Structures are given as C-alpha cells and as structure tokens.
Length: 322
Ligand SMILES: Cc1cc2nc3c(=O)[nH]c(=O)nc-3n(C[C@H](O)[C@H](O)[C@H](O)COP(=O)(O)O)c2cc1C
Image (cartoon, protein in one colour):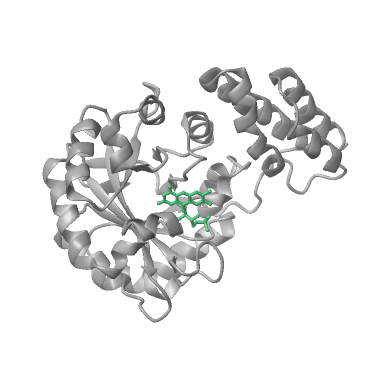
C-alpha cells in the first residue's frame, strides 16, 4: 500500500497527468485495466481562476472516479491563491503542483520547469498551496533544467520542507524534453534524500521498464504516461509482471478493436459526436501501432466524422490482422 499524506492507495501504478490526453474518458478507460489514481489534465492557475466553461468541464469528474488528482500550473501568488479557492470547491483527493512542464510558452512565463531554477520561489508557492489545500499536495519536478544543473535532490528537499506529501520526478532535464536517456541515478539519489514517497516517471513503456525503474531507483511508485496511449492494458501487464508472471497476456487485435469502440463511445458521450470523434482521432494510430496493412485506414481515420464510421474503421483494422 502507498500512502501519500492521508491518501491510501492500493496500487503503486499511477496514470500520469498528460495535457490533451488525460480527460475523463481516457482516465475511466485506464481505471478499468488497473489504474487506481489518475490526474485531470494540467490547468493553469489563471485559467482556473477565470472559471471558464472549458476549465470547469476539464475539472469535472464521474462520481465513481476515485481517487482523482488535479494538477496546477502557475507562478503568480495572486492567481494561485484564487485558483486554490476554486479547486477547494471540487472533490479531488490530491493536488499536484507542476514544476516540470518543459514547453517554451510555459517556461517563458516562469512556470513549470522554470521553477527548478528558483527553488526558493517554488518553496514559497508550495507553502501557500499546502496551507490552503484541503488535500495532500505533491510536486512534479524534473532531474534539473539542463545537464549542467541537475538539482533534483535540492529541489525535492525544498518541496519536502515546504510541506509536500510526495514528489513526482521525471528523470529527464527540461532540455531533454521527452527524449534521451532517463537518469535513474538521480532518481535514486532523490529517493535517498527525502522521507516522503518518491514517484518516478520516464519511459514506463512496458512491464520490463517499470520493473527496471523500481529496481534501479528504489522509488515508491511509478507513473505511466506515453506507455498508456492506445494501451490501457499496460496497467494489468505491469501488475502481472511485478508478481513474477512468466508470460504477459497481450490483447488480440479483436480485443483492441473492442476497446477502441468503447473509448470512442466514451469520447462521444462526453464531448458529443462531432468533437468526440475528432478527439478520438489522436488515439487511433496509437491503438493500431504494430498492426499490418492499416495505413489507408489510419489516413481515413483523420477524416471520418461520425461515430459509426470511426467504429467501422477500428473493426476493419482488427479484421486485417487475421
Ligand atoms: C502528451 C503529453 C502531455 C503531458 N502533459 C503533462 C502535464 O500536463 N503535466 C505533467 O506533469 N506532465 C505531463 N507530461 C509528462 C508525463 O507526465 C511524463 O512525466 C513524461 O511523459 C515521461 O514519461 P514517459 O517517458 O513514460 O512518457 C506529458 C507527456 C505527454 C507525452
């Protein structure tokens, strides 16, 4: 069992926050395959304080969707305080503060990974968030800004001192973005330096890589990010593999198609048919990764407009694998 503040989790496999991906349909689907804790897409403190319709929809959740986390991005104390008033109106179980986002537009504003360069400021913001939050507060960091400033140990210690209940670490620098080697060494060092749970991220793309992360770093849990795209089965597979299963049950193409149709339906139910089909497009090629003879169907998937057409393409992809 993993304990983050007063939140008790039965699993140490967590679905990562992913902007543009971890919406309600995606989270619900991954939960069916063994993901226990999931996060809403990251939202900026300014957007939260404006309470737009879009933001409210992003923050909404199903009553069965528990435990659920929210991820906050920002660097201006005024907006963070306002955002916290809004967040406190919702029933989240955990609140993560983002000090990891590498996107240029974000770091230029001094948010996300830019805060790694100013641990003092990060600490001040965290103290405010921890003080007013109704739930345990965690922080997501990276190994450092670039290879010459690998300060994750210092940053994680600051987060702990500021009252964080756990640290999430993506074992890459801001400069690396999402590519290049994951630095297992620095994750291990952070684990040794703090006494709150350390949750690791980076290339959790298969059961073997998840096991490697646990073994090489001693982390308390891992978060699955790109590994879950078109692959919710990864939660079940990692669980089996960590229990020493000799074989891993991969889904058949027919099972993949069934889940595609289910995911599509969830998107349509949540966003309406037109937007739901458009949103599902980005998952189509992920689900059919490794499938043969599907190039034409993938091209078509970026043009079809109805649920029926998209579901038909999903079934055809599976049929071609026989
Ligand atoms: C499309 C995409 C969106 C992401 N959005 C966020 C985000 O909003 N907040 C965050 O903390 N991390 C975000 N991440 C980073 C992931 O949570 C994770 O740390 C990173 O992808 C490394 O894990 P992986 O190598 O297993 O994919 C995002 C990653 C991807 C691929």
